[in-house]
Image (cartoon, helix red, strand yellow):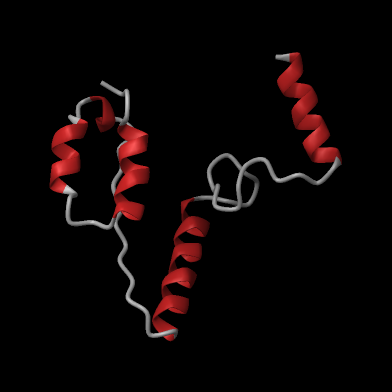
Length: 95
């Protein structure tokens, strides 16, 4: 625990971002509302640039232990790999 505390202290003292810019949970002044606002801004920018935009949202926090990754991957086969792979990585070894 001391190592983690030291690393966290070092990161704070040196202004090193350790939570990621897209992390909204467990941060001061961040919540699901700020996450949605950020997503809305990203979508608006993509649409202003006349780019296509797809939003796929699913809460797998409790259900992931019940999913069969092979079946899920077959169902998501039409998605581009760069969209499908992070989800499948998340589900890996959760059964």
